[in-house]
Amino acid sequence: NAGVTQTPKFRILKIGQSMTLQCAQDMNHNYMYWYRQDPGMGLKLIYYSVGAGITDKGEVPNGYNVSRSTTEDFPLRLELAAPSQTSVYFCASTQTSTGNTIYFGEGSWLTVV
Amino acid sequence: AQSVSQHNHHVILSEAASLELGCNYSYGGTVNLFWYVQYPGQHLQLLLKYFSGDPLVKGIKGFEAEFIKSKFSFNLRKPSVQWSDTAEYFCAVNEGTGGKLIFGQGTTLQVKP
Image (tube, each protein chain N blue to C red):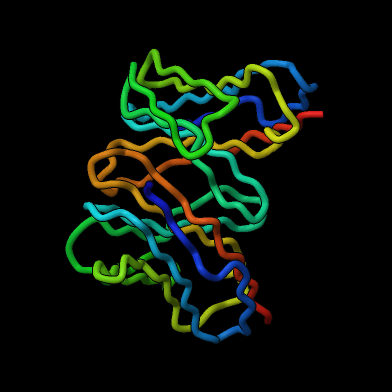
């Protein structure tokens, strides 16, 4: 039972570099989410998707991009990394919005130096 | 815009004390409500959820929460906390039809043995 899989788990980036955080789920979930978690700030929604081909901005989308070409995959791209993007990133998925359990990935620790 | 507010940022209790963590949200339509817990070094786990029916919801590990629509609140309670309840607790709100899932900033609970 893979659930929600995120890669990489840890990454150090230099300012201005680009990278993609991968997220895949094998539960055929429609809804997928990307959050960042900073100390004392809780989880902030970056982008979300309600199905393949559909994405929408969350609370803090600036500096990020996403795509949802398949139901399974929801990659998060950082185009020009900045120190403010140092954070822990969580991908999550759920079947519908009406009370189903949400499954989280293990997290990706990103440091921008 | 939809938002979630957790009033207590850091709570310290002795074992066997009663717990109540506040959560208020700002969205006038149908909502689904969640409480998640994050133990040190672990990812988020679902404690309980509300999406319809009885406004008093019982979850795992003796936790319960009450949805009071008129107050836009979904407070988490436990009659007697244990040292093992030391963790960070997050309230989350999902619009009934939209899919956007927003988290509060979290409450750190420290239970002293």
